[in-house]
Image (cartoon, rainbow, N blue to C red):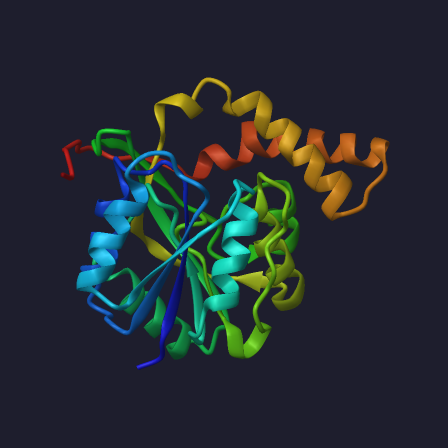
Length: 261
């Protein structure tokens, strides 16, 4: 059973971090290490993680000396990772119990080096929002170029194939740049066509997300891809077209709603 390294940056996550860790501990696939890098939290996050790590030596906590953003935290965790597989889980999201087992089997049975899955959305209180985010069944680089279909909490890649892929230090959209780096090498990716995780939508992120998303995407086109101003603006138009007309096809409405915890 191959070791899976789980990369988790944290910052002021005291309300959610215990549930996040528990969702990892509840995995049917038990050969994992969870590397949590705390980015100078001012709440009880560190104390909660320390307490849980004392009872489970698969949980490792590292504290940053200064607040540097999730990209730096993920890279520090990546440096500590010893697993063949690298996966990602933010400090407020959750995995379903079979997540790792299904993904590892899917990778091995299909001779793949990267995969991801669908995921469901919950609110800050842990209530389901009746929304499932899906993705193209054969995701190409160009599809990913105009829309990030890969939920960060679902992505997993094989270090034996890619090596450890450094995360961008840009504060936003680092996961998108990581998946683009991977897709540029493998050309296309197959998702597991079922929901394996819960993405938590935070109340303080809903209102500002749309405008900021455009700014962050523009930065990706300008900085990561190195495009000039005009080409970057054209890419943003393509992104808007995808968001308005194509991505909604992959947002499914569920019929049930219940509190997870």
